Image 1 (cartoon, rainbow over the protein chains, first blue to last red):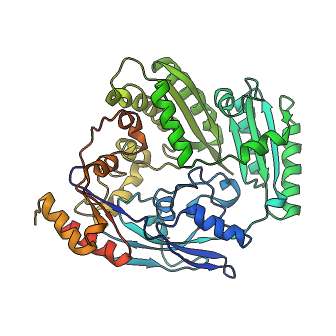
Image 2 (image 1 turned 120 degrees about the vertical axis):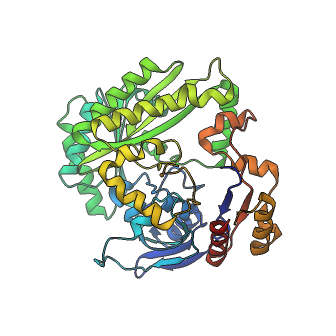
Image 3 (image 1 turned 90 degrees about the vertical axis):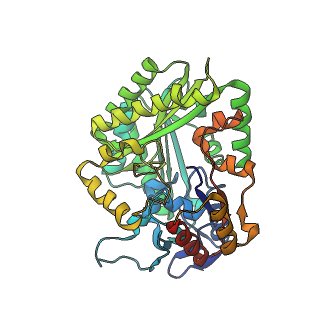
Length: 386
Length: 73
C-alpha cells in the first residue's frame, strides 16, 4: 500500500507475568516465542506452541495470524491457548479481554481478534496457557508405507479412538524424500510423538503401534532417525539466510500452501492438486506435501511445491508459477468443501476467494470489518477485499 | 482531513519521537514486501508501492495514538 504506515510492535517485548499456579503466561505482543518458551522450560513448563518459526515469531503475530505448532494434535492451535488479550481498535479504543478459564457471557470475543491479521485491530498483549514440560516421557515412532490413503486412515483411527499424540504427521513420497531421503526409499513416511505424563505417553504409543500393525504395508523406522528430525524442527535466521543464498544460486524456489478437510475429502484434494500442478505448471521439481495437524473429524494438508524459475523476469515468478499453483490448490479445496487456509492465514493472496470460502457466513465477517474499521485503514486488502 | 506523506510522518514523529519513525528508503523497500515476494526481492526488484514510514511503538497508549491519527488522515 502506498503511503501506508507499518506499525512494528517488536519493542513491546516484556514478559509481564509467569503464573505457574493458574498456569498462564502474560506477555507484550513483541515477546519472541523462543524467549518465553526458554524461560518457561527452565521452570519446568511449556506453552505447547511450537511453530517452525518459533526462533523468529512473536506472540502478537502468532495470535494475529491464528498460528499453529508442531505439537497441535495434543495442545491445539493458538486459538485454544489464548486465555485473554489486549487489542487496540482503529478508533483508538483499547479492549482488554480478561483471563478466565471459560465463560458463557455471549459469543467468544477472543475470536474476533485471534486471526484478524491486523485487519481489525492491533494486538498489544497476550495471555496463553502453560503446561508441565516433561520431555523425558516423549516417545517417537516412525514408519514408511506405500500409500497416502493408508496413512490418512491410520491418522483417522488414532484420532477417532481417542488418542492425542502431540505429533502426527504423514509425508507423501516426494516430500518424504526431501526430509528423510536417508530412509524413506521413495515411500510415504508416518511420524508420531506421544508425550505428557508417563502413563499417558506409554498408552498413546502402545495404541498407535497396535493401529499401525493392522496395516501390513507399514514398516517401522529406527526412532533415532526421527529423533534427529525432531531435534532440527525449526527455522532460525541462519536457515532463512541459507535458503536465500540457495535460491539465488540455483534459481530453484519452494513454497507451501496449507488447507484442511474432513477425512472423506482430504485424499481427494491431495490427489487432485498433485495431478493438476504436475500437468498445468511448468518446471516443477517437487510436488508433494504432508499432513501435520489432525483432529477427530479431519486433518490438514501442507502442500510443498518447488520449481526452477526458467525464462522469466524476477517480477514474473509469482504470476508464472506461484499464483497458478496456489489457485489450483484453492480451487480443488473449495470444490471438495475443505478450508482454503489452515494455518498461514489469508494474507493478500487468498483474499480473492474469502467470500467463496465462507459462503453465506461471510456476512458475519464483513460486518465486523464495517463495524470496527469503517474507513478501511487496517491492513487493506488482507482478509477483506477492497 | 487529507494529509501529505510528509505531514503524516511529521505527526508520527510528534507522537513517537524521531528515533521511532523510520523513513530510510532501504527500510521502506524491505517493508513493502514479505516472504511471498522473496524471489523478486532477492534480485533487487521491488514492484510494490512503498509505505510512508515504519514506526516502533513501545506501549498500548502509543498504538492507540498512532491509530487515532491514521483514522483521521
